[in-house]
Amino acid sequence: MANPEDNLFKNVISHAKEYGFIFPSSEIYDGLSAVYDYGQNGSELKNNIKEYWWKFMTLLHDNIVGIDAAIFMHPTTWKASGHVDAFNDPMIDNKDSKKRYRADQLIEGVIEKLEEKIEKEVEKAAKRFENFDRAMFVSTNARVVEYQKKIDEINTRMKDALSRSDMADLKQLVIDLDIADPISGTKNWTDVRQFNLMFSTEMGSVAEDANKIYLRPETAQGIFVNFLNVQKTGRMKIPFGIAQIGKAFRNEIVARQFIFRMREFEQMEMQFFVKPGEEMKWYEYWKEKRLKWHQALGLGNDNYRYHDHLNLAHYANAACDIQFNFPMGFRELEGIHSRTDFDLKSHEKYSGKKLQYFDSEDNQNYIPYVVETSVGLDRMFLSVLASAYHEEKLEDGSDRVVLRIPPPLAPNKVAILPLMKKDGLPEKAQEIMNLLKFDFRCFYEEKDAIGKRYRRQDAIGTPYCITVDHQTLQDNTVTIRNRDTMKQERVAIAAVKSVIQDSVSMAELLKRI
Ligand code: ATP
Image 1 (cartoon, rainbow, N blue to C red):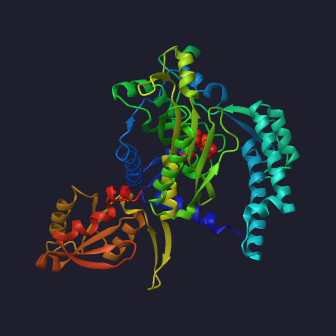
Image 2 (image 1 turned 90 degrees about the vertical axis):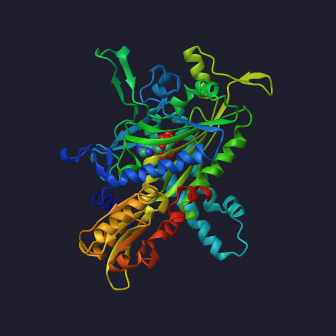
């Protein structure tokens, strides 16, 4: 039987296309794998998410400034950051289905199943015992202890194989765990090979290896190499942060989940520079702050959870993800990483330039430690779109699809709809549009029956529809229809702005954090 969650995800994807949010890239040529274009409504929603993030970082924190670094960087940047040597994923192919996988993800799939089993045992026991003590149960129940032991063993073996780049051992683990391809059902695997995720191209007209440059796989390095430029010109004092929104590129091995995993995507990253030894305090601070930023959107607090990293990247001394309950389950939405002084130290080494901060309070020079918050803009978009999408049956028996997008993020804030295309109603509606368009993104439409127009606005998430009718001409009032409640109220044109202002305001949203 088809999984209703899968159907929902399919419906979200086709809705996104039908209503101008997201199109497959170069669709007339049948698209390009894992690359997407944002349409007229999608780019508005995306810009609003960016604004929400950017203002949170740079307006609500007087010690955070923003930059916009180039995508192309000196190739040594990527040697210093470790990406040339270590930004690899282990890939494995199934010879029967011809499908390609990440070996580590196949192994993590086994761990996830064991974790689910533990959760089931916990749930069963929690129902049976009053005053249920989870920690006690997990450490004493024989079955759970056995599952946990297995998880730890698998994790240790995988981490060990990955750290030694021992691909034969990783394949052996796939075999020992008896992992079958979900498509062919067979265990007919190729060897595991390391695959570097960076895209490269040549700069200039001569195609020599010396001219090889990379498309940045993360925006963070543009911040690290500019650390001193910003600190000096901005007279920044530690602790301080540098924020950036920009494109990143990764030649992902498996990219199958719509805009969740793309080959060209956008990141919103902030590197927070702190005094060595204080990084854990700031790591906890940013973990909490970033979760609050997500929760303020009102998509449901239960849809978020932390996931601590067991296998830390080479540069980190602590790391966790904020996961979101996407249509395909809980997955990483944002990463919070304590990156130590790895990046700045390494850039110092490779560039031969000092990247140190003079702390006038302590009268000493040091390389700051860094706590980073890194959220994928496209994943944010998917979290908003998927949780906003609702298929509803109305009291009169009709259906509607409504996008309950948080109003400050909605592509249009108001639709202005003359009831008829005659009797001076369009002219009056235009007058209202001219009044409101400086404050809100307005959409004007006069074609089709009013009910149909309401449905179209529901489908793109417009929070308010203003209808101009014959009474408007007499007493300068209009009806305002609320997208979520579908209730209509009659208000004076002069009062329209104040009625809708607070609910669509970015400032009000920011105050909720
Ligand atoms: P994953 O484990 O899902 O591959 P990651 O841990 O490699 O992600 P980071 O390097 O921490 O991701 O990147 C920071 C953020 O950038 C992620 O939390 C995610 O939101 C986003 N991101 C990373 N890779 C992609 C991608 N291929 N497509 C869309 N967003 C991405």
